[in-house]
Image 1 (cartoon, helix red, strand yellow):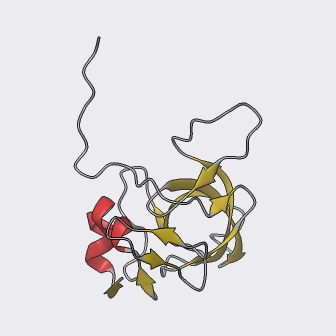
Image 2 (cartoon, helix red, strand yellow):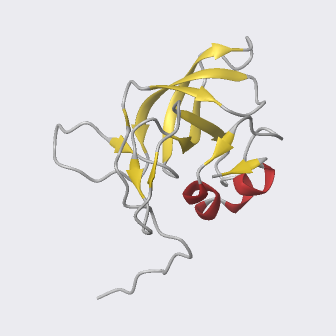
Length: 138
């Protein structure tokens, strides 16, 4: 049996609040404003079930609003905020007022140089490069 590679911070087992066709606010300064989720990277589920994502997951999205250069492009993004409440290990419940994501490249580095608004601690822990440019980590 092959051994699995251990991750520093594995995927969060949270309440999934994002699914396909969900519109997200792009919280960075990459030129995109509104994203629509097409699929979730690494989602393994039952056949014909809608893929779901939570904080820190990577999704494939299309840019619906933004600069003319960015519009209609297919991009990868990391979820940093979700409206649906989720529970932390310490028992507290966290809920944001919007669904937001940050665009990343194939290596996982953010495309923008700053992030507007707070980001979840779980996303900053799983993606340190995004946590470094965030102003507020909740």
